[in-house]
Length: 513
Ligand code: KIV
Ligand code: ZN
Image (cartoon, rainbow, N blue to C red; front, side, top):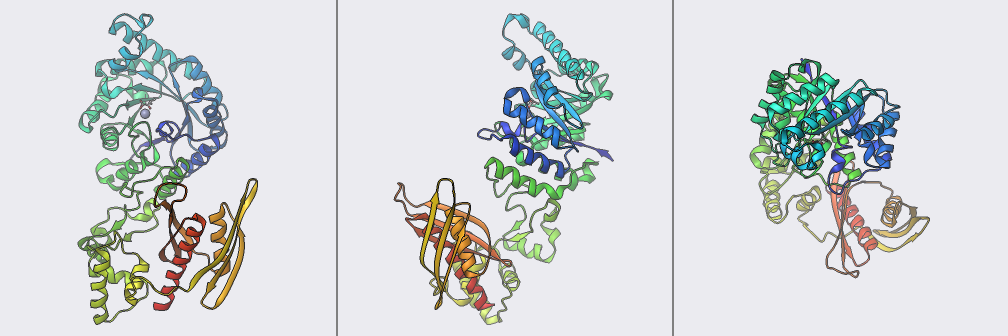
């Protein structure tokens, strides 16, 4: 079976996303993770664009040894020299150079007469610059990729001509970017096939696809390229990139894997690393992954409606075409809502170790529906309260008596906590990354448990510095998930209250189970 090379450009095109800037050390962290994911090529940056990007490429080239490390340049000598310098320590290196090939780019970027007076003359200049750049890059490395920028809107006859010229000049990979996301799958596929049929020396180079998502078709276009002879795909983790982004690698690779019957190709990707890679990139770039994002969104393996939940619980394959573990996703989830149905609801009760008689089931299910009509999602702690017929106002075990939190420039924040548990007084002190972290550590120490914090959110209820802060904290203790809420004008107090509220809900579990 043919192997498709996976070219990751998260650190170059991905980083071009508005508002995303990554430093060299963070890029290195991502590059190590990409190597673990098994990508064949990492495009580490654009060395000529800034000293920091130069340093990032240099660092990655000297420390990440398995994949080919690639650097981007324009068809300009100084850019190519910067790539060569930054890549000097790489085990295997590639220079990615190129130029705009559509008439829109040629006429728009090469306005001065020195590039020629007519379109034909400007096209000639373009070919000259492209071939000179490839020859220059070949002086430094054996592996040179040429990008025909805006190929998606170019005149195919001119595209074939320039590709033949750059392959003759030594390009080993020819990249056919749909730079503006204008292409549609059938036409882009035809373009790739026609390159295979019309560029005489194409046998000496690999065709690469590089698609943008302006019309939401980057993944579909990339896959159409593969169907028509491309054997390298360029994309980014989470689909990040310029404007609407690039083709999402996790989606492209999982499509190739899941529909191998159709595409008939393989990749060297360790798909179990997708989830971890996706979360690392999101965390470093400070972006939120939409819950419904294919492959790695929170809801990608969640089932909610009655028909789906019922089928899924009977046989996973009824509603899942991939296994969550194949992409490193924690596990499939049933999200309880008003539409989930009895089977899903009572399945969750039994997972929580709660056994109900038939009569109890009737009452509890009626209460479940009342709560579910008011909430987006019914959580485990709601189910516990439903059993107790105590939707709210359960007397609290843990209560805050007092706290002290200290922050000072140059010192690690600390917190001291005094809480009541029934008639006991518990006290502890801890240090943390911030006052809330310190307070949470102190409570965990005092209570003698250490649940995992899954989510922490703070919201100002009104505007102004005296606003009431509302904190929601979700925690997991031995597989039991609960939500706690707290409000106060002091956000540390609100955070402590939310944590204690969650602890009380965990405590409720102990009482019912
Ligand atoms: O989209 C594009 O054309 C690019 C090239 C620089 C490869 O990112
Ligand atoms: Zn691009």
